[in-house]
Image (tube, rainbow, N blue to C red; front, side, top):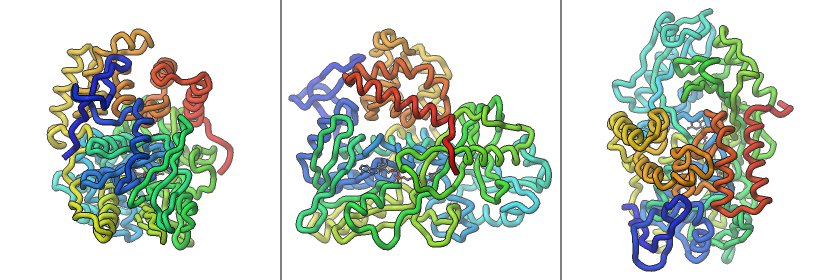
Length: 583
Ligand SMILES: Cc1cc2nc3c(=O)[nH]c(=O)nc-3n(C[C@H](O)[C@H](O)[C@H](O)COP(=O)(O)OP(=O)(O)OC[C@H]3O[C@@H](n4cnc5c(N)ncnc54)[C@H](O)[C@@H]3O)c2cc1C
């Protein structure tokens, strides 16, 4: 069971929302995952010896923290940027089995990951949406009619797809009926099957929040700079708070390196980078407005160079991706190049020839790095997406490879290993994983089948509180069963909304993200908490000033911090639109 909300003394925060205090008995408090509590949490972390310390707050680390803490292991997690700021906010945002990997005979991986789709959906229906995918087949294309039919049938079987969501094979005419923008030349028909669309960063945040609800400690902008050893065994880490510039030593019996693209950097610190190593490949997505690219239907299609990419409608936009190229640059800041943009524009114009999209139509973009495990002689798109665990002589447990979709199972596997090690060293027996049927934070809507009525009821409550219909529905979909906490802030935020000149529902969402989701900087809110920099860039431009001013006042930033954090958002806005030179 999640730990009881902490009791303590009321402290009035900005907008009258209640912050935390450990002093004495008092009101029911919210769980500790507030931007205001970072320093306090780090101090507490430095005082305790944890069973498990997780390095990295992407989906892999968040999943491990939830699995471990919910099994009773005292767990801490540190993230050097914001949660999900690595690969986990920059994926294609699909919870999918990876149909194309069947062609590479990755049957076991497709079966495992495919089965996870339904579990992720059931536990987080507010962050996961079934999306019928159309795979058109053309003369000479990657998938022909028979291979599509066979591949999809195998996919249905391996992934245990429910009857209503099993594949259909469509005629050319029916395929065009689903998506009239498709190229007609050489079209033989289409495969029609279900995948799931998600918001990768919000999925990560909801998993993280659930772990914290169970009692895990987690802090962002806290970088592991050094590893600490006792007689050659890894015993802890030195973490630097990148905001306050203070350092802390955090000790744990076991340490998992879930640093995604940085896994090898930590293995190097541990002097254990040998054998298999990471292979980073870069993936870019472009975003278009539906007015310019009125995509009706998600499509998985061939590129002229025989790769496959997605075009996916979402929130009035259509996004297209991804590229897949070897990467050796700055890991923290992969950028879209001119060549990436040209490649994707060419691919989309080839499949949707009437559109004639140009660079001027690109509204936003994002670029991510896949932390894959190197396989000699393979092209980026051919490298396996399988996950693997490496254990060093000092005891550092590194988890690499894998997919967003498989995070829960990956977490279970690594925590099973940790549990076995702890028990062998004298720890009391540890419960098995219970995440398979555990709703994520916000996922308590009564199961996926109840999501639609839940959204309807809660949207009308939002309207009664004066929030416009469309905005209320978007908030319910974003926060799921946490919506009452956001609504609870609306009245309390009225005066702050007036002061900063921001609509009250935007203010409530911002305050919620600070007090319940550890938003610290403007980029956290506009990229990882709302996804707006990708899917509603005009909204970011509209509210960036007041949001930054609010955060500056709330956290008491220095002039230098104000300038730096505002500039960081400007830089992200710029790079979402402007490619850099290069391949
Ligand atoms: C373009 C692209 C498309 C993709 N599409 C899909 C898809 O549609 N579906 C799917 O299932 N998967 C997809 N993936 C794969 C998926 O995104 C990744 O497998 C997953 O996000 C990896 O998560 P992670 O937590 O391991 O890594 P990350 O999300 O990168 O997290 C690692 C974290 O560790 C932190 N860290 C590193 N070093 C330190 C340190 N010293 N101290 C503290 N913290 C540290 C980093 O800041 C980072 O946030 C895609 C990936 C890419 C790049």
